[in-house]
Amino acid sequence: MARRNPKTRDEPEAFTMVLSRIMGRTGKTDLGAIWSAWEKMNADHGVAARPGAFKNGVLVAVVDNAAICHELSFMKKDILERLNAALGSQVVTDIRFKVGR
Image (cartoon, rainbow, N blue to C red; front, side):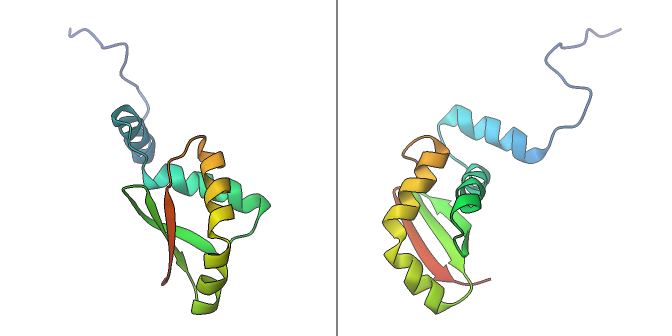
């Protein structure tokens, strides 16, 4: 009988959890971690946007219409500070808002 590796799990693990662990080892932050931090931040301060993409420190947040896009551009510095506080480090260097679905 083959020896069982004590590090293996009997239960399946969510792919997002595996990916977060891998990304954590490489020093990268995945969109899932940003999405979680966004939800934490959004619980206290309702921001009418959602994370869409993250690359090289730039978060692209998707909004429903141009008026919200314009309004959030004035709040960008505050949103950026609160998001990085929720992430626990200076991960996001810039936020760009775009209209989309």
